[in-house]
Length: 285
Length: 73
Image (tube, rainbow over all chains, first blue to last red):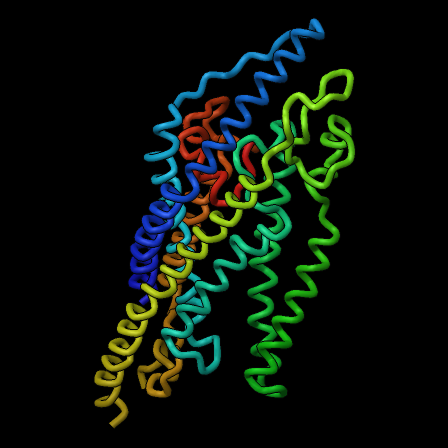
């Protein structure tokens, strides 16, 4: 039965990715373009400052794909393949969760597993290290940032799986409702402690050396040697909208996976048990 | 009773559906595939690179990488 779960998971994942892509194309792409325009203008202002100071001017690197390709086919392929990957992992998680989650029914389990995926693979890591549009993120810290982000993803997965197990252990003593609340509280405490311990991106030593003490890598205003602002900091509204749409797209992706998988899983599990009952009866009789 | 693969059927709750090493291999292979796709969409040619000093994968999925929450240059 695991194969049916996996194939169906990947199919609903691809469909979910398609929906998230349509959303991204309409809502996110204009903000991504704003961010890239900001970056272009800032680079120009920086080279004017450098030239005035007699410093060598940094040259733009040529991109192998045009903005038109990146903003249509590129983001489309990226999100749909991401959806397939998430659907595959979702199918595995669902197959593993079956029969290990107490009295939860097939359709409810489909939504719970999707909620777990949304939280562990996106939202919890996002709370500590939120999505950033182009123009935010220093090239020299990409290793540190990737490591920290993947660490947050890994910790979130482990803590949520442990939380589900812990809840099952508490259930005989506290009942399903209170056991779930206690397990959720334990997860929140552990995750909160991890987020407190991990550094903010602005605190990375390369950033402190280069830019001074800031919480994040969001570009500050550009100033000339007299301290006058010649180019503004990154626009706050663009950053907010980009992050809001990022959360919305992932919510669309995971909700679609859960809602589309739910009836498929129910049909698989009920027909499967009906079949096994039919074959089991002659043996038991 | 041959209900080892479908325990708890009839109560309405989800039954255990996994049985044996073949199921384990399928699950393991699928996790590998999912993680590989996740890596190429989100990480490759950023912090680490499989195809050396090339940026085609990175630049092609550039917008998706930012938008899906991955760290990018």
